[in-house]
Amino acid sequence: MTAHTKGPWSVALDWTGYETHRVHSDYCNEGTLIAECFAVYEGLPKDYNAAPAHAEAKANANVIATAPELLQALETLITEGDTPHTRKGSAVWDQARAVAAKAKGETC
Image 1: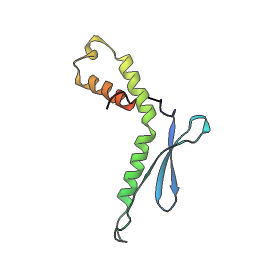
Image 2: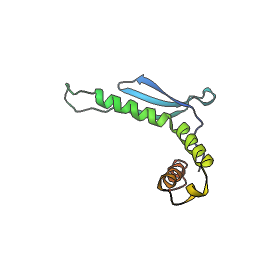
Image 3: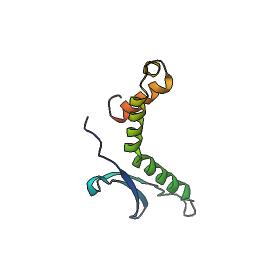
Image 4: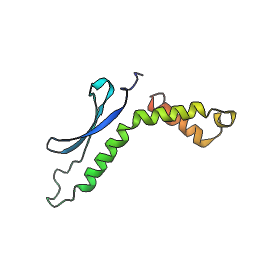
């Protein structure tokens, strides 16, 4: 698997007909677009309260933007916390290893 775009990633608000939260890479000022999170409410009543949908889109973008840092922190924790006790049989450590592998595309 190809490595992910290096972090840090950041979120910027963009108004292009929708309130769109775009996640970009800050690596080397490339500004690579990672993801777009926006609320869609076409066909809904005009008095529809879009605030929760916008808040959710922003929250999703923030989670995506922290992915490189979360993966790095998780890998550091796994490496530095590697002891005979944590290697096998601990559900929390097994979950941490599984999530790190999933983030790197090493599992289905």
